[in-house]
Image (tube, rainbow, N blue to C red; front, side, top):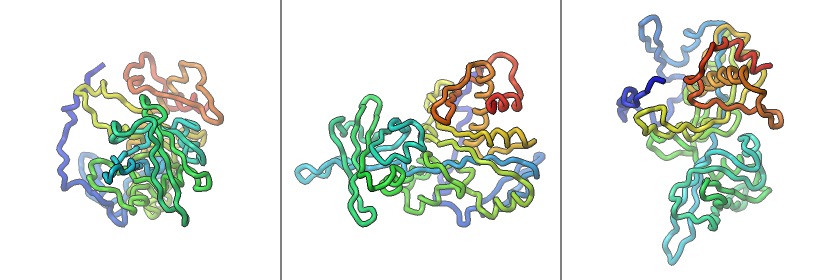
Length: 333
């Protein structure tokens, strides 16, 4: 297997080239088009000029959750306690499915990244209280498994679901390269207009430029759209430290497809993925089809079939590869 050296992919990103706040309206952003050796500079609202008719555009409709929570330890002898940051990574209880975790109205447990971890003991619950709907609502966090960084959250039943709690207590986890604190406006600006299913800690940024006007123009041209769900995990922020990229530990992300997605993918002669999250979703779907063609049926839990594609599987695979239609047909079956 060929070695991939990190220095070969290192490039300079000047600070003054980073847009720390979105353009308004968002479809007025610049669009760069590469076509037949020529680079064109256009605006994003001209996208329909470059997407052929009878194309299927695949979007990621995940919704970013305010995954960063803060708790303050009690004041002692007039000295404020340490500030503890809790960053949600993956739900554990009552279930590992993100939709189930966000709908929970009772205690739930998450695997978390914990800032200032050494200052927070396992037997030390921390509580923060904020006004919600005219009354003070407490949110309590407690480490229930220090080795695995599992944190249990509890709140009054009548305060709503965990999604409601996060919208009130949480902070949007902006990418580190923006180098600015989150603002209330980010609750909407750091979402695609088609975001539906809560669970991501980062937005599928290629989709942030789409507006209803752009989608309408694509539809009028005969471009079809479809939506899958990939809940982007915190590993997307994790820098690669190993000079050999193969040694970089990869995180897992939750991905949801439907049978309708598969039918649409098989029906269209041309498929464009909107952004890298949609692209790696489609790639993973193909490789799962390859695995299914060689293995037994997948595990089932309720209405879901569980699958996992390890990062090196496509590079270590030996033997003839099925076509895209064969692989997706296996998944659909």
